[in-house]
Image (cartoon, rainbow, N blue to C red; front, side, top):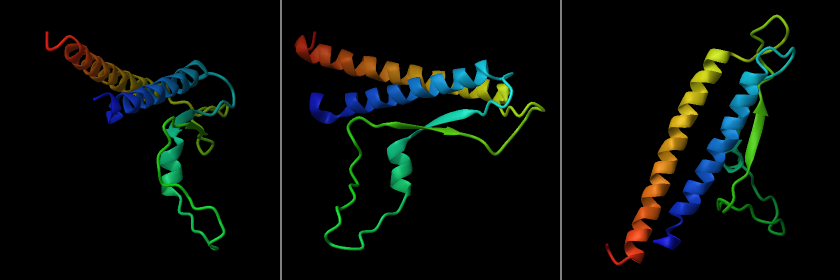
Length: 128
């Protein structure tokens, strides 16, 4: 049960949701800042897995397909749009919607992690 990796995956997901929350909060707080560009957070290994890499020589180091235990996040800046006359591209309504969605996912992850810990606690106590 402890070695299943579920807790590690939940922790990684919570870390992602926390980083995502920080990016969204930054976007909202800079909604009136001239030339500010909205940012978003993505799993780096998700981006890396979408990139194709080929070994052209057997002496080259092979590319790993394993996901790391501690994933890193990539912050992307959207520079292709502008919603305001001052060069800012933050859509507050969209950001508020993303914030609400992120909070729901975060709460669901917390509930799942609590359930996992409660199960472990029940096993430790011998089913009582």
